[in-house]
Length: 173
Image (cartoon, rainbow, N blue to C red; front, side, top):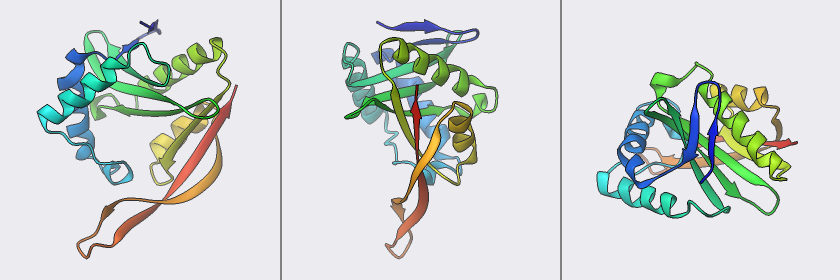
C-alpha cells in the first residue's frame, strides 16, 4: 500500500474504516456554496459505507486510486486519481475546517510527484471556474486551463438544468 508522508500529512489508500470520516466530509461539502458544482454525494450511512468499501477494494488497483489525507489521526480530506487514456484525472475534497491552510496543495503536490516518479507525465482536473479556491489551487500546482465546458448536476424548481462554466485543467510534468 502506498503511504506518503509530507511535512504535516500522511497520505494512504482509503480503507473501510474511513467511512464515517468521508461521510462527514461529504455532509460538510453539501453545506458549502460550491456543492452545486459537483456531483451530489449520497450521504446515507449505508450508501457511504458501500462506496468506501468499493474504493478500499481497489487498494491494489492503479486504475482508480483513492488517498486519505490525514493530519495526525484525523482524516481531513481525500484525493482521487482516475486513469485516463493518457495519465490521470485527479479530484479532491477536504473538510472546510481544514481549508486555506495549504493541506490540499501539500497533499496533491506530493501525490503528483509520487506518480511522476512512476513515469506518469500527464494529469488533468476539472472544476467550476466560479470555484476560485480550486482554480487557484490547480494554477499554483502548475495546471493550465486548456478548455471550458458547460456543466450541470442539478435542476431548478422548474426542472431546468442549472448550468455553470467548468474548466478543464492539464499538467504535464
